[in-house]
Length: 603
Image 1 (cartoon, one colour):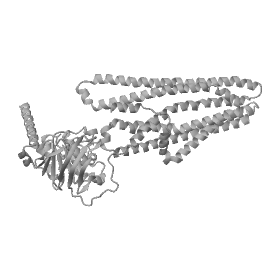
Image 2 (image 1 turned 30 degrees about the vertical axis):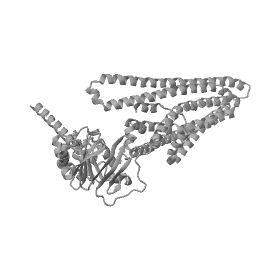
Image 3 (image 1 turned 60 degrees about the vertical axis):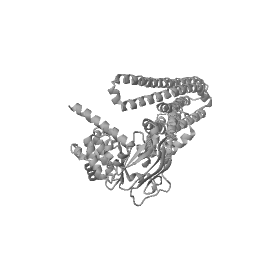
Image 4 (image 1 turned 180 degrees about the vertical axis):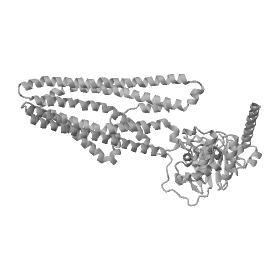
């Protein structure tokens, strides 16, 4: 997967793709007026570029030769006015294009984020989060460069070239042809530059992707690096990657440092030929001195947009590659889709029926096979089994994180595929073994931006799960800061907080997925007391490795290799001496051994 990601970053594609460009330009539709105004300002700036040499020629031929100071002063004022107009137009165009770039960047990034929230979990199973972050950040930034420094600016460069070539031919087509004799050298230099920069740009992107992947992996696994004292070896490896990235950037700088002076030299060569040829024309009276000076100014302006266009090639190429990756993500359809005409239950009772359920993450590698059982309203049902039996997969199907291939899951007689996902999930409360906390305050981690949940309700939820004794030690109470991933809390505290989060939303069906497996015995007793009260009159599904936590369940469903092998209460299953009995005996034995080791250490 990682190598595929690097290959994806390496691909550059064409410098211009009409299909992609057409789709990109649709993001400018909401800002048509601003775009049109920016193009108008570019037109004004381009015309001003050409007007200045005309004023120069007019002043030299009509007033300097005639020693008319008053007329020359008027021309100078006109020259100053055109300069100020050009500066104002350039400033306005630059501001508007930068504004456009930021607006389009904002729109694309929001569209990507909304789309990512709609995608099914299986997509995240197959695509590294780091690559998705690159789409939302780096690739969108590249498109910002195109909209702010690419599309509109390219139009300006092309307009300037058209006006300058027209002016050159208007002044003297013979002088224009002399000027154009240096063009083959410029074209050759541009092609070489483009080829070299294309290759080095690919290398820069590839090494940058390597560096990002290395950083993300090793910073995420920093505990392992430090645990096995691999800091020196890891630093050496990153030093190699970082040096490669630096050297590729140096190569890029070198090509730019050679190309732009080359353009200047070719321009100087053109002016030299122009002065040589134009001098003879002045002597024979077919050319005025003012016209030659104006011609030289036009030629100087002629090479600037050509150099700019060569530089814009990289921006366009990067934009095409980034847009292809972004649109590839946006075109990924969610595997879990809403039904066209959803069923909206009027009264939610909480009866769950699972009938002949088959599920596989891929192909026919079945995780669940012909699973059938039901859960009555207010009933506590425990699902047990060895690791890999399909317990968590069953919960994921109930939440419609994935869709099953055969059978049905129904709530109050309605297949969950006929319910709106927001409606379905609003009735479910899930507490996972792996608790995820967001950076922010404690109340925000319970409320999760649900404005209808008050601080008083959060306080009550925390008290009911026994978190209030920890809350009392926090200086800012409900507004105490929670670091990223809950780094400031213990495992048990994070688990209790996840219980409070589920309870604050007051679900009709409470689902506990290994919810007490990561807490100590004392904390587990706190949770168990709270749960006994909370599950009263509430449909509850409990998945637990610690079988002692589910002895009071109304029904226990034993899964083995994705199939229901036993159903019954704890006492009945123990009498059968089947799979559940063996699981219980094994766990009881491990618990006894653990207690003996603890006692020996204490002794």
